[in-house]
Amino acid sequence: MMSHARRYGHLRFPPWRHGQALKYPYTYCAVCLFAVVGCTEDHPARESKDSNAKSPVPVVVAPVQLTTLRPSIDLIGTFTAIPERSGFVAAQTSGLIKTMSVIEGATVKRGQTLIQLDPRSAKARQQRARAVVDKQQAILDRMKHGYLPQEVEIARQETLRARAELESLRLRMQATIPLHENKEVSDVEFQKLQRMVQRGEAAYAAAAAKLDLYRMGTRAEAIAEAVSQLSVAKAELSGARLAVEFCTIASPLDGVVTQLTARVGMNITPADRLATVVDLSQLFVRIRVPGSYLSRVKKGAPVSVKVHSLSNESVEGTITRFSGDADPRTGDVQAFAMVHNADGNLRPGLGCRVRVSLPPVERALAVPISAVADRNGTSVLHVVRENKAYEVAVRVGVETRDYVQITDGLSAKDVVIIEGGYGLPQGCPVKTTSKE
Image (spheres, rainbow, N blue to C red):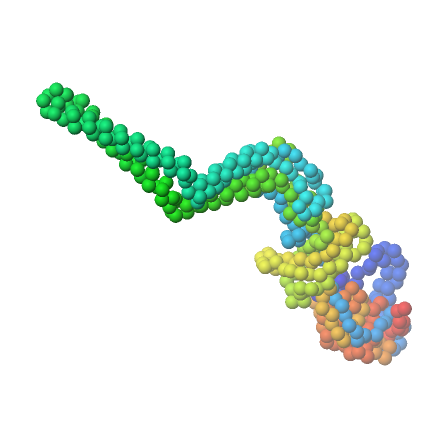
């Protein structure tokens, strides 16, 4: 059943466009009067025997055309941002918002500073990391260049002093042994002297080992360890520098700030979304394509978009992608058409009307859309043959705003009635007039 006709009883009447029924009431009544009294018969399927004696009914006719039809469907759409052309502004470090240099709706450039965090804590960490790097670098340099002669001499003197003290303690110990055996020195004093000798031996061994190390130079393992510690310190310094840079939050792309939630004095974390920036030079129009049209609506299909609240001019675009899932309730599939927004007046969230062009039909047998009616679910029209009207059942194909394709029931030589033929019985005499 065609959606562009209205039913009345068992017949359908074409819609009166732009209030024609109200603007021309007398004309509308005259057409209905001709349909009722111009050529009446008890049984419309049987041709009247005395039809030649009746007055011909005036009708308007049009020839069947063999042409190229360019069908389309009209849908409701909504402008939305292109995901690849929109970005979120978020912090990469925690901190306190110190200043803001942007407002909602402002046009910004990629890399432009939008928000500045308090950098004092980050700068302090950077200075500390710098000092650690300097310290580790100095240690590594000393290990690589070895010890100075003065340091070696000092180590030798310390070894000599430790050995002299050890020999003095040993002599004292040897002198104390006989006294201890004769009970002239207590056990406590003797054990104390023994511990002093042991400490002296340990001090001498440490001094001698240090002297040997200074004379031999730094071992390769110690140098490798120092290199690793320096690398760790440099990595921490790089992180501290990034923390300072992260205190300056910039726009990720060229566009317009569509949302701004940040405020001066707000404590933020890396998970907080502070603003949204959208490149409005191109937008998507989101539409719902009925499942019955999916076979004819493809990527690259041209669309014409109108936003009546802004302008009567159309914005042209093409369908570039479809959603992966269909609506389980309606079978509709979301499609996205890309349009250019040269003047920047379009915004995400605006509603619009979208006309989607369907594939053209070459060499289509077409009649004006007003010629086709409906009789109990069957498409019918009236043809004129030998100045008489005959109702013919037809099969329709694609439709445009003005024409409908007839796939079965007509030939290219037929002439169809487009006005005044509703309700005429078979074989009713007619007087034809071509529509200018």
